[in-house]
Every structure is written in structure tokens, then in C-alpha cells.
Image (tube, rainbow, N blue to C red; front, side, top):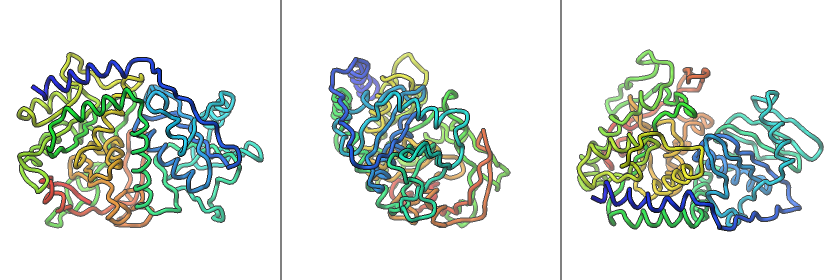
Length: 431
């Protein structure tokens, strides 16, 4: 009964901690006085995208020799502050919280007004402060370079995506990011850390767990993110279905291209073979949809799939606009990183960022061929934006519509990943 009742009961009991008012001290260290400052506003997105921006901001500040001030405001997509999740004073060696209300108003006006720039632009307020709205993956950190933007003593950086200091290799970037994520997990509030340790202790010991993260579309926050598939070569050297080969030129939702039926088939495949897979493999399942979790658990024999907080009368999506929901997401994020490999919905940053914590192999699941995730041992760390920048495995330019705008990138030519099938029994994977 562990699968259906013990874990669900354990989480139900322990989640009472997650919704209580914290008594833990959240004092923020005084900001340093004599070094230039990088202010990073984090006002949008869900938890994983925010953590990705935070980790990248820490690395960027380190590369620039600046102190990092983080202005994290709760929103409908992430209804928790930093101090709702972490003991911020334990992280004082990496950043401090931005607390000036007057300064925040100035930042909000400068970056999020209707006049705010949509592309990379410098808006110099005075001789000591610059607002930068940046679009693109790479940020120049060499002060002598013509594209260097961060000149003022205080720089406020608005960025709406993942970013990467150009001064370091992708290998070093992901290794440092892994260290930062581990520091964040270590600094989780005691109540949440207690839940994490209790859940880990309740799981069967010595099992080979595959982490599975299945996303359901939340119409309040999500858009069609599963891009059409281009340029995949299977084991016979033939291009797989999808993308221009099938006449598709628009992205789709997770339900359309990475639904529960596809995950069920992949999990059955992994149970069927591979050195790391086979009959004794277990699955640790996470999703923002309780209904999807229950569907998958019920498809498999008892004690095969383990999931938290799904066996109740509620079938809605995980709540993102309150503290309890975001704490549950952070718990999932930490637990997912404790598995052997992560299989997750294509286009969702949650599984990919969780894999970075312990540098796990990961696969982005989609119809027409799943994509092997970040691997520091492959060219461009097998990261699509870095590969594009470094001109690795590129084909001609292709364009598609992602629900709100047209997106154009160079086609990345992916080949069949035999080693994923040999190791885990997961055959339709490309890298």
C-alpha cells in the first residue's frame, strides 16, 4: 500500500508545515559597499525558470566581479518570495536581497512600463546606474569588447530567458550551476528540508529510480512550446517524421506532442531492457497534474511508480500562485534530482534544471523523436542555444510559429543516440 497511501499520507501530514507562517529568521545580510553591483529583477515566470535566472545571475556577477542584488517578487506564476523557500542569510556569499522600495519602483518603471525596450538596449539613468534590457543567450563579460554593456557602478539587468556569460566554457558553466543549485537546496527552510528527508527515507532503498516529469498545459501561464522536429536521423540514417518533413511549421502543446500515453510507452520500454533499466527499475513520478499522475500510477503494477500527493479527490493543476504550491514544486525539484536519469516533457525547464543539480542524464520527451539533454561531454554541451552559437551540427535556417510569434533558428542536426537505448532501453532518442 506504500504506493497509494503511505507516501500520500506522509506528504499530506508534512505539508501542514508548508502552509504555516514561518518563525525562521530570514534576515538579509547588509549589502557590500565598495564593489560594483549587479541588480537582477526576477518578477516573472515559474519556479524553475526563476531558479535558472538566479543561478545564471550568480555566475555572471562572479565573472564581472560584482555583488549580486536579487529583486525577487512573487507573481501569479510563482506565489512565493525567496524567504518563503530559503534561509537567505545562508546564501550571503552568493547574493543578497534587494530591499529598497523606492529603488524597486524605479526598476519597475524602467523595465516593465509600456515604453520598456523589447530588445537589447542601454538606458543610462545617470553616471552611476544603467538599466539593460537584454535579449539573447550570451552576455559579454570582457570590458574591452565592443558589445560590453555593464559599465556603470550599478547595473540593472532585465532578461527574459536563460543567459550565459561568454567568458567561460559551457562545461564550467554547468558545473558551477550544479554547485549553486546544491547550495540552494541546502539552504531550504527547515520545514521543507524535513519533508524532503522524510519522503526520501520512505522510499525503498537500493532501487534504480528513473525520474519522470510530465507537464500539463496551464492556460494561465503556458503556451505551445513543443517545437516542430527538424533534422533527426534514425539508426538507419533516415529522417524521422515531424517538422518540415511532415508539413508542420508550428509548435504544439504538451498534450498534443508529449502526452501521458507517450510517457507510458516510454516507461514500458525502459522496463523492458537496457543495462540501467529492466524489470527492477522503479519510477519516481512528478507532474503539475494530479490526474496525469494517477493515470500513470494506475497503468503499472503495484510498487512500480511512486508519486506524491495525487490520491485524493482533487484533479486540478498544481497551484503556482501561493506559497504552499511553490514549496511543493521546490520539493519535487529536489527529489527529481535524486534519481538516475530524468525523462521529462520537451520544452519544460523543470526537468532539465533538476537534472543539472547532480549532472544527471536527461531526455526531453516528444513525438517524432525525443531529444537527449545537456551533457558536458558532448560538443556545445548538447545545449541547443550553445550549439547554435558555436556552429555545432547546424543545418539551414528554419522558422515556425510558437503560438504568439514566428521563431527562426538554424536547424540542429541530431543523430540517433544508441547509448541511451543500450543503457536504459529508451530507443527513440537523438543527440
